[in-house]
Image (tube, rainbow, N blue to C red; front, side, top):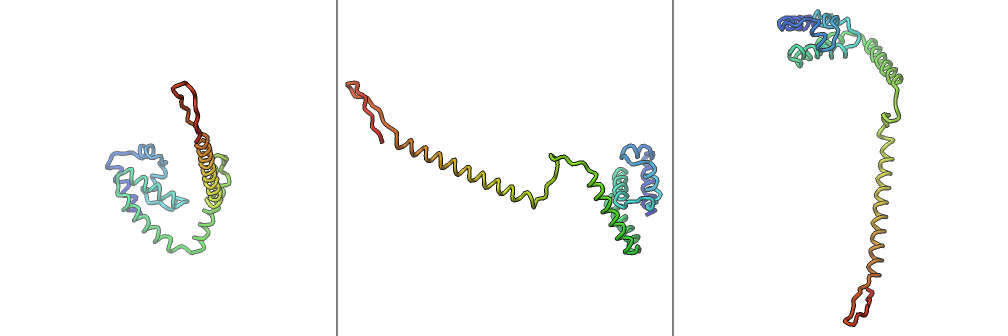
Length: 169
């Protein structure tokens, strides 16, 4: 990974960009950029954060991001394949613990609370069923009113003598 770091530094310097300028542009601390350029990937606690910053920096410098990502993945595979399984399991448990703590600390509003789909589906189906029943009831009521109006319609007409006659259907 030292080659990737050297490539980052060489590209930045050839573009005439200072570390401070790059840091400001992509919101990554200067120290982190220095570590990326020196290939000191062991200084990072979280491999996901490292990868994101590496790819962001590569994209900023105009490097082939897919090539950098491929090299990074190969490096990580070579590096992690030598780790004992117990260390990997420990890291996963720590990551899960941190994620759970973050979720517990998050303040949730009842307006933004996310409900699981399993629990909302019956309510949605019940609501749709009620709407269908209301529509059917309204249609039936309208048809009954129409039938009643048709039965009571009457026709009025006047004769030549001025008399008013009504015929009821």
